[in-house]
Amino acid sequence: MDFFFEPNGIAVVGASPEPYSGGRNLLTNLTLGYKGPIYPVNPKYDEILGLKCYPRVSEINGSVDLSIIFVPAKMVPHVMEDCAMKGVRGVIIESGGFAEVGQEGKALQDQCLAIARKGGIRIWGPNCMGLIDTAKPYVFSFVIPKDMKEAIRPGHISLMVQSGLLSGGFIITLMGNKTLGLAKVCSIGNKCDVSENEILEYLLNDPSTKVVCLYLESFINGRRFFELAASSDKPIVALKGGKTPSGAKASFSHTASLAGNYELIRGILRQARVIEAEDFFEMMDIARTLEKNFHLQRSTHGKPRIAILSYSGASGIVTTDHMEKYGLTLAHLSPQTRKRLEELSPDWMPVNNPVDYWPAIEKNGPASAYKHALSALHGDPEVDGIIVHLYAGHGIWFLKAEEILAGVKGLRKPILFWLMGPESIREATRLPLEEEGWPTFHEIHRTVRVMASLFERLR
Image (tube, rainbow, N blue to C red; front, side, top):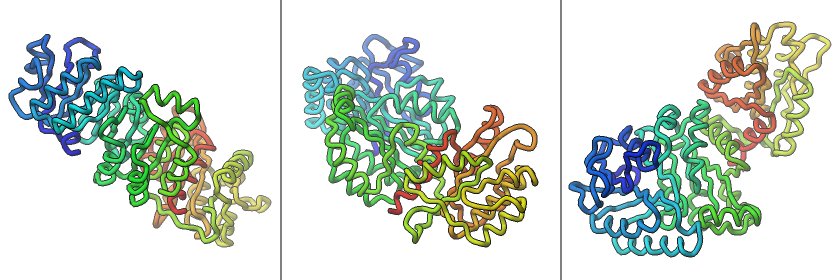
C-alpha cells in the first residue's frame, strides 16, 4: 500500500487549467504539499500550472507509481491500459459512473479491474475522493484547495469512508472548528479492488494514527475485518450505513454496496470491541475523546461509576436519566470526598451525587468551587469518570481551564464538560479546555454517550 501513501511520481489524468474544475483542484492540491514529480495528463494542453502536460501516461519521461484518474467513466478503461503500459503500480479512480449507477457502469468497473489485474495495478475506488495525509501534507483529492489549506489540522485520528462528503466538506468543518486533528483520510468509494481491510491494516500499523474511524456501507471480508479489529490495540469507531431496508437500498445507489444483515454485523462489531456510532459527528466526538488516552479503570461493581458536578439540579437529573440509558451509574462518593465537598458547601446543603454545587458557588465563587470539587471527585477511587456542567460567562464566570483543573493530579480520569453560555465566551472557554485535553460538548446526551463509549472497550 506504500505506493498509494508514499508514491514516487504522480500522474493526474484529467488535469485542467479551468478555474474551479475538479481537474484543476486535484493538480493544485498536489502542488501545495507533494514534493515528488507531478505529471499533468491531458491531450488538450502543453502546460498546466507551470507543469509540462502529457497527452497520455505512457509518454511521461520519469517513473510514475500512482495515477489519479478524473475523466468520464467511459474513458477510464483506455487510461488503465495506458497506465499498465507505463508500469504504474496504483491508480485512484475519483470519477463516478461505475457500479453505483447500474449494469452499464458495473461492466465498465469490471473491465477496469480486469485490465488492472492483468497489468499488476491496484485500484483505489472508483467513485471516491482519494486520500489525505495532513502531516505531509498530501491532498490527493479534488476538494477545494483554499478550503482545505485553511482547515487542515494534523492530529492522530484517521478516517476511512465510503463517501465523498466525509473526506470533503465534513472534515473541513471538523478541522475548522479546531475540535480535532486528523492523521489520514481515505475515501474508498466502490472499493472494487483495494478493500477496507487492507486500508484498516495499514492504519493500524501507522505510527501517526491513534484512533481509526470508519464509515462503511458493506464489508468485503467480514472474517478478516473481525480478526483485524479484535486484535487491535487502537480503538476503532464505526458508523454503519444502510442499517434499514431503505438505507440499504440507498447505499446500493451510492457505492453499489450490498449492506448485509445489520443485526449480524452489529454483533460482529460488538465482539470485535468496535465502538458503534449513530451519526457522523457522534463518531468523531467519540474518536477525539478516545484520542486523549484517559486512564480507564474497570469497576468491580459492573457499570462505570460517574460523578456529575453541576450548578443546576435539573441538568443533573437529565444527565442521570441519560446515564441509565447508556449503561453508566452514579458513583457512590467516599466519606472522604463528601467531607471535602462539604468544606465549601453551606451547612444546610447536603452533598449527594449528582453534586449540585450552586450554593458552594454562590458562597465561594465559581473558580474556587469548581477547582475544589474537581480535585475531590477526581481523587475519589470510587469515581471512574466525571461529567461537569459549566457555564461560561462574563466576569467571575469567565473560567480558565488551568485554574479550575489545577487540583487534578495523577493519572487522568475522563472529565467531560457540557458547556453553556454566550457563544463568544463559550468558545473562549472551550478552546483552552480542548487544548489541555479536556473534551467539551454542547448537549448533555452527547456528553453522556461519549463517556459511555470510553468504557465499551473494557467490556
